[in-house]
Image (cartoon, rainbow, N blue to C red):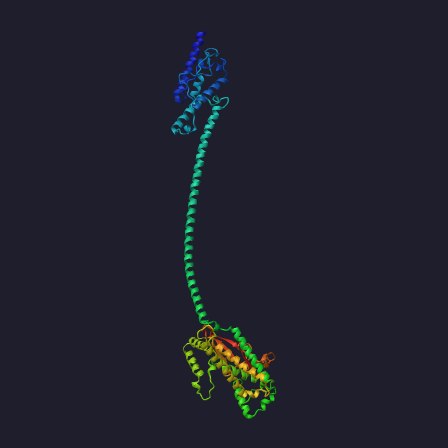
Length: 539
């Protein structure tokens, strides 16, 4: 019996070895010999009779070992859980004990070191070969038989595939990101290129504007320097000396208005008040007076205009007109009025003032600027300033005194001539000495003011009735004002356009500037004063 049992076990063992060899021949990777029963340590030996569960567990363990690629010792026969099947009734006997001390070390040494990189680096042919072997192995050993109790081998496969899938997903994600980064980099490069082009264009435009601004700056600087030089030349030409600083025109107009007021006040104080005396003059006196009045009033047939002899204070009006005409024609028409010696025996063409006036008029035909500059310089030379520190101060002082005396003498002669004229018929016989001194002062002030105005390079022109015959009245005119005796406010509706009857005060205008320019542009220094009959004409 024992011999039969041993024979059965040997046959069973040989059959298992044959199957194991066939399996190893099919897949060289799995050429691992199972342990013999006598090689299994005592602690791993169980009952002789093993349950189907233990057999499945052992098979799964072997399958797991195959899947892991753990090599087995080829010399060791396969073992199915450390038990052997009896040939008869299926009873198992325990395997002989194995006291080999190198089993654990041998088992650990046979475990290979697995690396995901090695598994990933297998080529497609090896992967195909393993897939074919796995299909054959699964057909031989069904899947349900290889599930271990703890699922370790299955979990390892899951980890392996997860790692491979993770690597593949990582590579794909990395490739996607790389493509995105490359596209983003290209976009940034294009943006940088556009910014660079815009910057270069802006820089070019700014440089062009800068060059243009520099050119404009140079032009403006040249214009400014030219303007400064022009103003300096004009200032130096106008200010040869502080003594000849031009009087402000506002001050000039104020002095002329003051002269106008003084003349009217003197005429009002010295004229007689009875209008009937105008008709009581002797024929010779009346003719001489009418002849003088023809210079300031419209005289027809040797008679005064209608209405003039009937208005109140007409003698004062006529005396004022004659006095203003005498003052302005004596001093404000000729710049050389003071050079007249009043010699009745001297020919008019041989008088000094006449000679200079002829030169002045001839020069104006050539150049107004040069003519007025010459006249101004001549008058300034004849009245030099008083300077105590000059070497020729005495000579300058003597010349100045001579000119001042000539001006005063000319003023005195004109005043005496007026008092000797037919205008004296309009003056009261009992005019006192005070009024006489005021009268002389009027001529003296007018002569001095005239001389100072002639030293300027402006030109003065005096307009009397001879220059303004048939002048029509216009209350909006900037050249004339109505006399106070006209009562313009009461008769405004019918006075416009009527002919002016009397020029009570001449019109004085100035032309040019102190720089001897713009002689075609005039301005009023003293307005004219006119009178006309304010009564309505009969229908």
